[in-house]
Image 1 (spheres, rainbow, N blue to C red):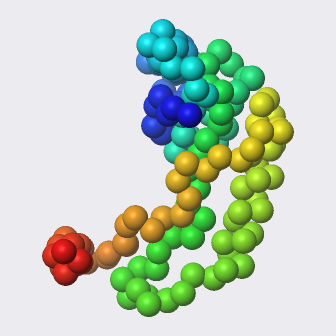
Image 2: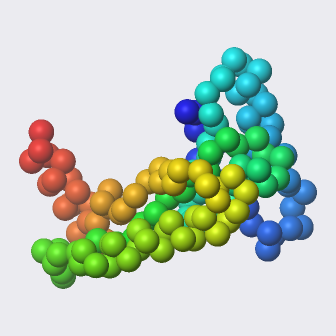
Image 3: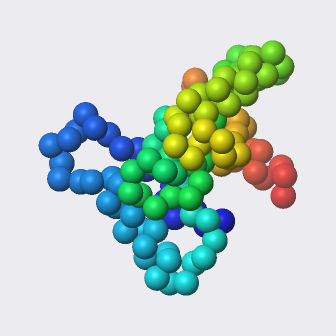
Length: 141
């Protein structure tokens, strides 16, 4: 598989701009094909929104993919708090129902979550975030 774009978010509310999102994605997919790419193409939706579903539109995507952050990390004051398994499980179940509801090729295709969860960041409410990140990086070397 080849990801030809990352998290493009069509914004119909700014339709005053002369920009066609399907055409843009189609041009990227055609460019990949002309360059000899024969594997399935995908774009990951920044959220579970149903943008660029295969079989809906002329964008050229073969697989629908999306980011899904079900449980966000606790804030600094609750850094040692545990995430609740039932919240995560319910979120995963809801994810499949929502993805299938988009129709097109996604009605029966495998669910492809490009990014799952939110463990790459830590929510910090004070100015100590940079120092904390620095200390983590330095102590892990």
